[in-house]
Image (cartoon, rainbow, N blue to C red; front, side, top):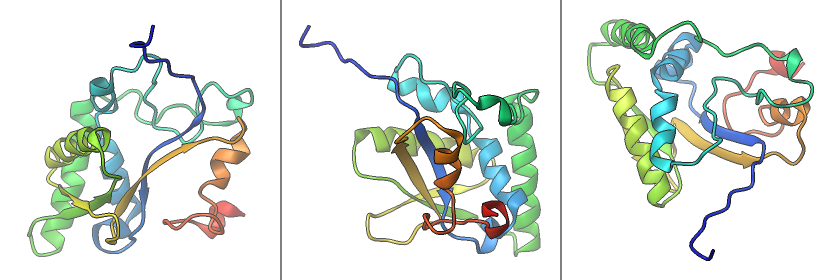
Length: 177
């Protein structure tokens, strides 16, 4: 009917990319703390979209050559344990850097969906001692939302999205090689 929303399943990337490698984000362990803090199940609930599977991986598990990609990170850890670990890393960084507040900015587009997503991420980060602020469209940000549909379903497409010649975010020439 005209009131029915139909969603076609597609492969793609939906997550956060690091744009600033200074301060707290200079350390891979600290960037990992931000990933640990996110309650992926809860972040998706307000959107009420069936078939949307949260993951900690860059490569979706349903690709034909998925067997070359490692499994989920932290599958054996509860959200509480992950957030405890993240909180410890944040606390250690704050102690080593004057003990003040830790603010991380996130660039997301305007819109109701972005508002919902931002609020959920802000709550997850607040739980571990990080204040998430929203960057405007033309402002620099520490993190940015990545929401891209894959042009084709292959591991190479996903990995190429993080290639240093393609991205405007944190990248690794060693990983490219």
